[in-house]
Image (cartoon, rainbow, N blue to C red; front, side, top):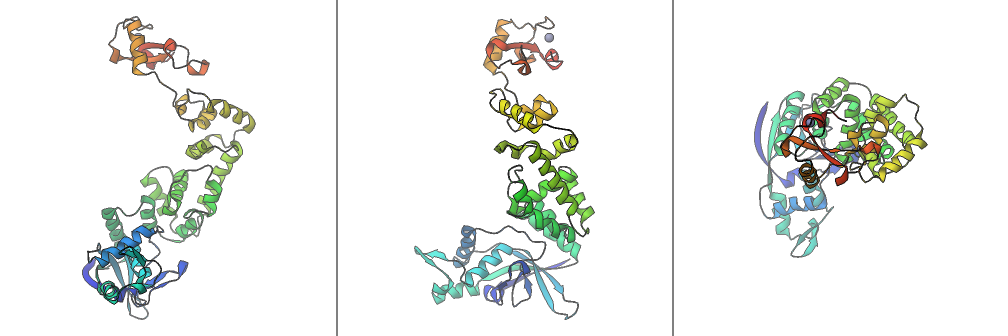
Amino acid sequence: MKIDLHYIPVRSLVDGYENRGYEGVVGYGGLLDIRPKFQREFIYDIKQRRAVIETILEGFPLNVMYWSLQTDPVSGRTEYELLDGQQRTMSICEFVEGEFSVEIDGYPKNFDNLSIEDQNKILEYKIMIYHCEGGEDEKLRWFEIINIAGETLKAQELRNAIYTGPWLSDAKRYFSRENQAAHLLSRDYVNAGEVDRQALLEKAISWIAGKGDDNIKSYMNEHRLDPNAHALWTYFKNVVDWAKLTFPVKRSYLRSVPWNVLYEQFKDATLDSQALEDRVKTLMSDDEVQKRSGIYTYILTGDERALGLRVFTDNQKRVAYETQNGICPRCGEHFEFEAMDGDHIVPWAKGGKTIQSNCQMLCIRDNRSGS
Ligand SMILES: [Zn+2]
């Protein structure tokens, strides 16, 4: 891979700038693809865009940007793809086009309202750009390194940069933006974080492929050239539809439930959603339950650990310890306080509360072996 540094004035960068929406964005006399297919969806807010212009007006350096070079096989013309610096580049072009203003001496000014001196300051400002020449794989590898160094992309945005292809294009039609099918379907049942930054796509893949970077990457790699992402969408939809039918009453806690795990275990079971809802209702008002999102898992699996049940405070345990004189009631031996733990005499499932009169100290071995 060949890399060299160039200084390009804003005047040349904004020449021929055109934002054609989904069709792409070009600049630099039509030779620069400002939003290539592997670039992020995430967009600067107005404060960040203004900061770019203010940096230029102050004459401070902007961080270096990266363009990759390629020669058009037909025309032989050298063209450029923006590897890093998309949001800064778009901010500059949009400002010169008059799409937003900055505040100068307390007044909002767009490009045309600036003094000729300030306009020239912007147009003559030189941006540091590395030109990178290499194959597709090298380019993506380079892109990955730049972004790790800059920490500018979320993990899934980075994966999207690497595993491009028809599968990803289709997956993005469902999962990449708010108000797309997946978000509309799942917003009451799935907390995906920032959909525009690919969090929902990440969640959907982790449901079908397993959690973690390695699982997600190998799934994306395996399906990269698939003609579409129907399998991913269908699986996601099945899981969410099942969750909706099983637990139709909306509560914010629904969004933290690992639905894919429950779906895999119970999709073929016959479940009475009204009876389930009655139990959810009761448990929601149980003061002993600390993790209410775990109620849904507990009701199906019976695993109390999902509920984050209340535990005794150090003071309650200390009082019980002193009352027992440090003797474990199971084995009758004496232990240090640190070698014992608090135990519910009447367990939670039988109505026992986390109160002093229900607290006993057991040695760790007896506590682990259960009652
Ligand atoms: Zn014991």
